[in-house]
Amino acid sequence: MRAKPPDPKEQAKRAALNALKRARRAAEKTGVELSEWEGEFLTSVAQRVETYGRAFADPEKGARGQALSGNQAIKLKEIARKAKGEAKPMKRGKGFGRRERPQAEPESDEG
Image 1 (cartoon, helix red, strand yellow):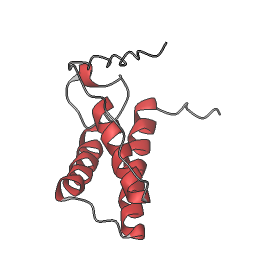
Image 2: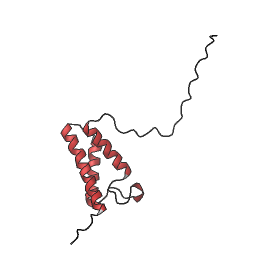
Image 3: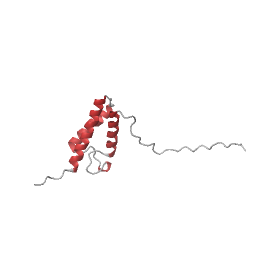
């Protein structure tokens, strides 16, 4: 008798829950103090993944069969890096802004 192939949704759910647990454990182990918002984020996302199998309702915010949206995955990586004690959070870019004009070099009258 053959075993059934694993359910991709269930795999994504387990992977997300394990990543959330790893981030929380790493913070506790290293003694890094997570902000109130980060702690609440980890708790609420884990609760939604356990209840619904995914942590977001809008299908446009994440890939089909994934448990976390793109932005949730990025934030989870930032929290995990902070918990490990790595220096800076991920850079997100500066958005649309004015670029500074390059400064012209002064001309010299040597000759």
